[in-house]
Image (cartoon, rainbow over all chains, first blue to last red; front, side):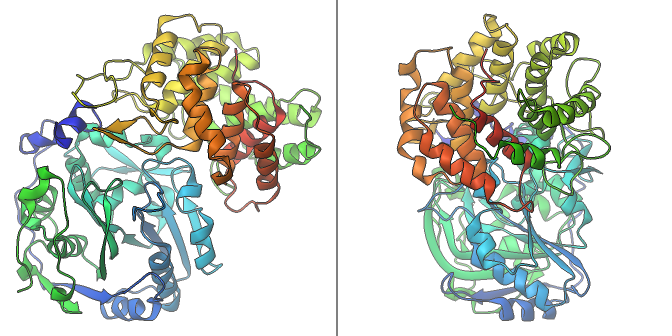
Length: 330
Length: 289
């Protein structure tokens, strides 16, 4: 039995295999997104989680034109479950480096918020003492699963959901920074910046897991959220990624990189290439390329470390081996 | 079982979460929400606590106002069409407070809600044809809403109904073979998924008196064996309730729960979990028939 079959069979997911049919909602506008200038994507080497990257991250954010002075900033890491031997979640030291970089750049308020998809107990997410201990006391940690939401029109329409209930801190932030983990995903292929937006939706509205999104189609949901939620910056934790049966049951894959960009799709496409996948073979990234810039190599301006240093091939489930590509960055 | 001397302070603290306009938020600074209000109401309704009783009365009025015409409960006054999963907990509260009309409407709604079922897939350790309860209408069944619904039907004297029996079957089916529950997928192929403390405790409460001890022994052992690893308020509260439902010893866990409830500042304190902690420490079996 294939993983994809299981997921369909358990109704964890809807029929995303028939994605092109768009059984619900409207068709995507077939207008390729064109960036007026290449999207900057910066690679920073981070050899281990003991390294403080605050200054380096602040410098890149500043060069990318991210203005934080006086702003209310929300960092959205990826917390799903906790397992001592598996790198499932964005590492606290990466979160801390980014949060402190935001303070360095003059942010008035910085918060770290997550609506974890499997665990209700926020002790396993942003209210874990290990995260709190490495953050400046001025930085607040917000359990976005349990709290108020703002009804926001769905700007995508692929899922047929008329609106999303966005966690209030997401709706009220001046600047939203997505901080995903570099992982394979047993349904979508990879989970990076765009998939990370599932965690902007509170569990008290969507459940644990957010099964209504699965029923409407994971890829469609990713795309609707990408149209609806404005993300201002992205930092992917690729210091230790997850390969194989991600995003929970896979194995650690050290890569030693942070990927920074104001453009979610450019960051995701670059991360996918570093993982050995061709983003133009990953369904939701292809579709996102119709309205976001950064899918094609020519739309990306790589900065920082030479990507060859990090390029690898992540192990993956058989279903996704067809998504492999490259060699990239040659 | 000795009621801890801190109870009065806990009642005062929990009651202080109540908002002037009614209801209790999950966290200070938030808007009122049904779940923390319902759990707070139960925790504050301890016998012999006039202050708690007064606070509970006002919360009950607020919660009653959240009930929709079809018997379901809204998540909060702004989003009354969301949060159908809370109807089960509301039915328990209405039953405990002697509100027969709202209780019966809630139960009628609860009985009308069925999770979506799909065909089984070979190699998967779950029966996708068993009907449970979903978080959101029109989706699959999951452990927590099903556990709450089984509790509600049992507490309200309708535990003999077929839906309750199927809910029990659902929960037993979703039990991880080596012990515990997570959100509702015990394993994929030959790999077990990870169990959670809180969901395991809740499922054990729901199954109390409804199945043989042998059917849940692995889960009870799992909680007992791993109890030193449990650190969160939510995990400790539900582990205590789950173990004690089945007559297992939880004295050390109670001490740790007490410590956790005394420790945290209000920043980051979840009122729903604090209320669950109070219910666990009280030893009152509000979720048992």
